[in-house]
Image (tube, rainbow, N blue to C red; front, side, top):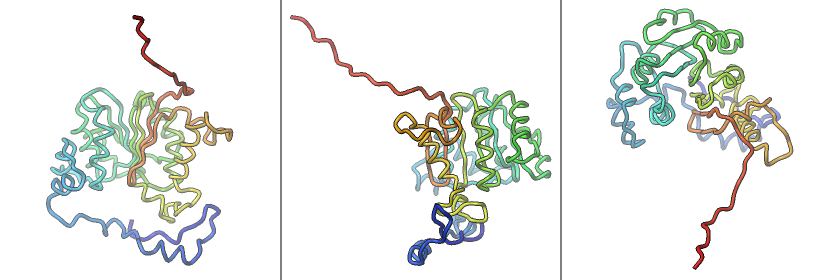
Length: 271
């Protein structure tokens, strides 16, 4: 990402007033290059900023034969949500293969029992098939292709979307894959600063900004407390939690039951 997003838009799509636009312009997205780490000790940077120590940090900082690119604040977030899946049989799917280094990282982190798949639209990524996981070539906004990969995997427990980052693609993948995710599963989307980039279909308060979709999920999760019904065709009925971090959104998949409550007190003892 090498350019700043264009001016804000209101939810209706009209340009915001000039004074608001000027205020927003005081902080600009500098592009990926503008946020690149200028130091030499990746471990120290992550430890000092986030107080984080983990095997994942060590694996990432050590590097591998193939290039892997991650924002530093992602490492503790990954470890928080993905560490329960380590060293056990489960099915992990990463959308976006790129240089192949990410699949290497996940194989080392999760261990030999994990079934790991990656997809990419770039046919050159087929060269990484069978190294740290299986690679399939296709688009993340093709429902038939997505369903075929899930079938080949025998189901899916964790999805990490690091694909095109385009708003229509992010939403389409979620709408297809979240219903197919196993109960107790995790759906993580990263690089959601793309939500504010017009060239990727987003923008501040733009209707297609994925965080607006996440807000509708929140409303559907709380359908017991309002009379406006569900907006997302039942997606919210199987979401038990949503976690928002800088550029990452995590959805927990589980059955959602109508809420119930109780008053409890200890029985009074009789003299």
